[in-house]
Length: 124
Ligand SMILES: Cc1cc2nc3c(=O)[nH]c(=O)nc-3n(C[C@H](O)[C@H](O)[C@H](O)COP(=O)(O)OP(=O)(O)OC[C@H]3O[C@@H](n4cnc5c(N)ncnc54)[C@H](O)[C@@H]3O)c2cc1C
Image (cartoon, helix red, strand yellow):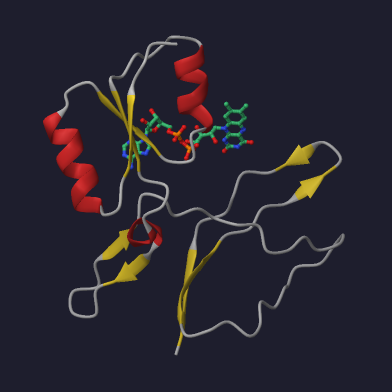
């Protein structure tokens, strides 16, 4: 593996500046793909810019004025429940105030279906 510098970004602006200053920099989020790419020498960056510790990039916001939806680049879906056969409802209770995004998929012995469309729920 070729040597590279490593920057643990403290702010989104610092990460953006590092990318702008170094044409051979590579972003790292979780690193699942990046580590394989490095080990296999498919990429040879001189700088790795780690953005995994930036909470600002994990937020999902809806602009109160124009309704613009902004999904942070580190935002992920998390599985919250698996229900039994023939069940068509599930209650996700007790959520704090905020905006939540839900999607569902079916499963059987052969595997999982694709996900449904995403439904947005506002908890006041
Ligand atoms: C062994 C293995 C198993 C996997 N299993 C699954 C699975 O079960 N389900 C599934 O959905 N996926 C799976 N994946 C795919 C993997 O989860 C995705 O590719 C995911 O993008 C990895 O996320 P990460 O945060 O680790 O990305 P990283 O490895 O950190 O980055 C992935 C790529 O995106 C670039 N990048 C990162 N952040 C940004 C950004 N903000 N802007 C622009 N570019 C960026 C990086 O430079 C890199 O090229 C698997 C991959 C591997 C290697």
